[in-house]
Amino acid sequence: MKAQVIGLGQRRSGTAKKTGKPYDGTSVYIMSAASDVQGHKAGEIYLNHLSSVPYPEINVGDIIDIDRNEAGFIEEITVVKPVKS
Image (cartoon, rainbow, N blue to C red; front, side):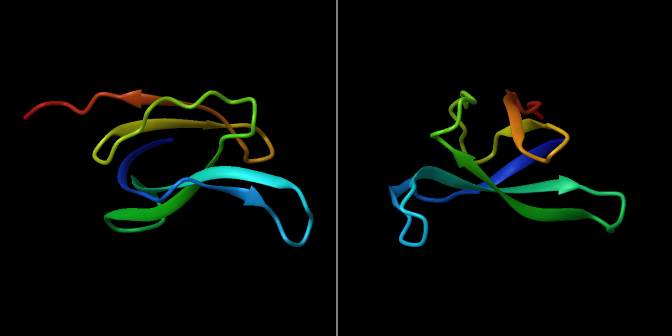
């Protein structure tokens, strides 16, 4: 799925109060085309920095391609350079 990055949250890390497990991640806010809406759909993906998936540097305005596995977890993100107008 291709999407445009429209916002980046702060990187947050720590230990979850409920489970006691560590967390380290960043929220990335995206906008993408969708067949079930007119125009674009906005959403959020969470980049878990503790996972084995290496993430590229992502900036606001970048076009990214998100690959997910059968369970819906992110397997790979690649930055697609926006076309200059």
